[in-house]
Image (tube, rainbow, N blue to C red):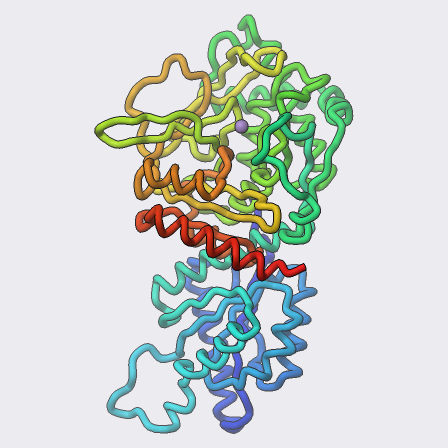
Length: 501
Ligand code: MN
């Protein structure tokens, strides 16, 4: 997906007039070199653009307002080369509607022991200028990321990279539209939620559409385009004999391709970034969309099954964040456990809808009966997921707030053949282990549906949660159940106070 086309962050340097024009020129020159250096390194997903040095409350206010309305600006990377009295920042930060990061760096790396004098000290005083600026952010209770270290340090660049990706996903969510085909799976709780609150909190809207409207798109797809897509399927996947040109179930493949093209046309014409389906409402569709959903996800559309719009929006955000990274991201469901002396594992899958970006090899294009839904056998891609470090993320509606729960996991190879399992699947070991991770997840109220990513880390999700202003609960290598329980109790109080009336 072309997630980052034309996006940029603005490098915003704070200073003041106390030091004289010569020092300010040096500040501007150093600042420009850092912005160019960060971008020129080639490791960031898009450019960090130098902006003129800020020395007055008015200039700061104007820059923040410009950032708010600039459609390609995802947020500010702020840096205090010198001291920049932070009351100057109040008006600007009060109106800033985009995320900001404080880069606590300095132009020089090491202290020039032999030549350092007071002029040098006055020019390179991030060490205390950044603290003054930091106080203002804390006093105003503003969520932001603070990255400390020299600007050429690989770790600093990596953390900036993570934040830029999260900011791009946040940018993408503003004004995003998600379509629901059918409502929630009947009686299911965790996939429900307040769509009005979600729009206020995350900036995206979720609306329902009649299956009949979608079916009209599916039925209106020209035959020639269906044939073209079938050729793409045959090039991309290993097709089982019954679905091949002379196979007994060839018509099901044609139907599946038509469903993919119909949903794609509906989403593209409507400008949607994701969607939900539910097997309880497929009126007019011949089969539950399987390969259609899988391939649309691979192209960057967010997806949630059984009407799960929160997960659809989450998967979309994760797709934006992981654009260009190795590994892939998919809608996922914790399906069944492997309790064993060698280590407890989770087998993740779904009825059909796992994204082939996480596939370890060439997916197999298959058709099998589906016991629920009462429709014709659905066509789907079957594969094992790639092994490696991964995360599972779930977003839930706690009634007065949204909570994002993330578990770091280790994806492991599936060593046993699974000849009877007709769906794509992933196998992982949760951190710190299944016993603690699943107990913590359940106590936190985490859903069975997740966004599963081999490309992202917990830091991407934490940055995104901070930008959204929502609760973030991390279950990782260091987690202890008693600590998580306390954190959840304290968070309840914190968000109660934050929510007010
Ligand atoms: Mn499900």
